[in-house]
Image 1 (spheres, one colour):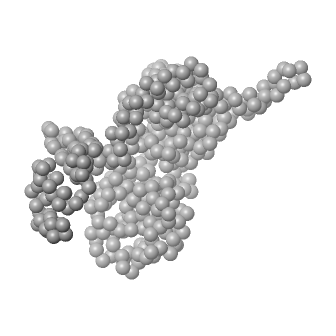
Image 2: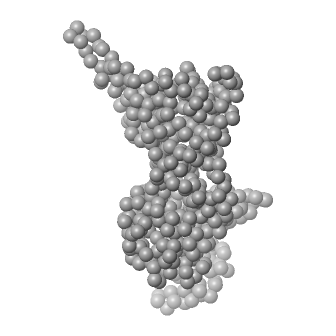
Image 3: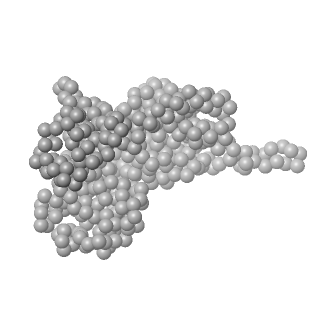
Length: 463
């Protein structure tokens, strides 16, 4: 057996595997190598600009296929990487089966929850069907019912049994409404809730304060109204912006906002409910993005959902960008950093990305050095600025500067980044002894490493 294994390996090294393209030949080869599974990947060009990738997993012992993944992409290297990243290699087929099995039960539970509209029933629904048919409505109803419960709990009874409601909250909204013209040129809150298409029409037909050039704000503009919740404020770690509208690649944990509060603390205008933006999802035309000021969160909802509306002046977009740029500079955590790139790229593309970036009204962005990138590390003392990891702008040698202290800390989820990043981020600093390699920070564990320029990573640019 050992001799056969050695011969099989020798044949593989000689290149026989490259010639072994049919399944029978491949199975024979992996059997000789005593492998448990065969992973077969095929890429076909269907027509101009459209390719197809199929990946199949074959159990050699059982002589049967156990999993497969297939998708179309745009025939580019970037498109290929994004498509593969989108595959669920943890058991996509089984997951789909479970969803199909629960589909009827989900619809019945959704219908029952709507009929009863009870806090406990909605909470049980969202716990059992976190991605169910009523997912968005459940979060809204739970928010509303919790608010009512809180108001009821704060009420008091007189000796005669008469219920005295809690004292009214401070009149935050009236002063705000009086100043909407100066606060980024926002309109008053709509009196009625409405669907997404009704919201667009409402703003286009609005005549207020002597102006008629109102429109529904983009999600980036709507986020400028969020305050006291750093992750969803302008420049925060929530990736959903006017330039990133995919429900698959842009929504993250940071978009969940902060703890619930009914006093308007998360809104510059004192709002507490869901408000529509004009930004539709880039991967689902039936949904659009909203901002919720009860949690200070960003989420998507069906365009048929009825939300609140504040319109923005048609000529205020440039002003909003200037406000965002000033906010970014004034925030101690933001400094002069750009938003996170929405996808991974090699070093050359990352450098070009920063050189060509136009963001917040500025175009003088560049890729950060390794010392600058390390200023974004937090809670990992060895790789924070001044830490015992010796790699910095003045020490870029792999053999002389990188030590065990550069290995970072235990893995986490955004803990080691002031922006809650978790991936690998490029620097402009090349390795001293080999310019084909450059230094990067992996915020998953706060580590500092070097990799070839053909590797894959995210980038945040600096001014």
